[in-house]
Length: 248
Image (cartoon, rainbow, N blue to C red):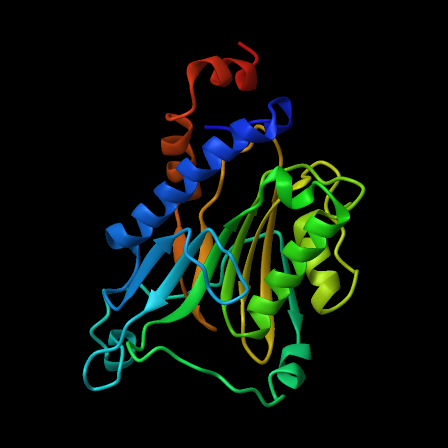
């Protein structure tokens, strides 16, 4: 199913679809994509970051997770070859930032945030303030060591002329990223480590969505089925608005 032009409807209609897609994403992750010591929760709150889907990790009584002792689901953490995307980028700035001392308080349960999925909404770009808050929180999550997958189907505007990845990358490194004019929408996966990797796939209205990596460790990921989850969420959009979005 091709990506629709969500600028044809108001923010409330996308908000409805947004919640459906988030539900489908967390169902896919919990339905077999994640190793058994990981799980996903939708619409949970992690510190100052209000994400759409959190991936968390639990530990067994020995203090090891299954990916460490070899009993993870076969292939779930394999990353060979690296994701096939149009652009990649690397920054070593994380190495210096993460050397700063901090006091960390953890819950006694040991369940901790590993990765975050965000679906960008029109509201995230509605003003300079809201865009800045989104970008600042995304960068802050990376600096805290959370891996990110950001799905931006909202066209760039004057506040983010290079799309959401361009704005995030400028916050953490520089303004070198240039979004292709014919592919203005952005899927971006980030592996958070001393040396951070960004995997960026530009897309356009009418394209099918590729699978994108969600990193669980700096060098291992699961591949999220964006096309299948998007289509399942689309089925929940009222026909009246499906007709508007498809030009029917």
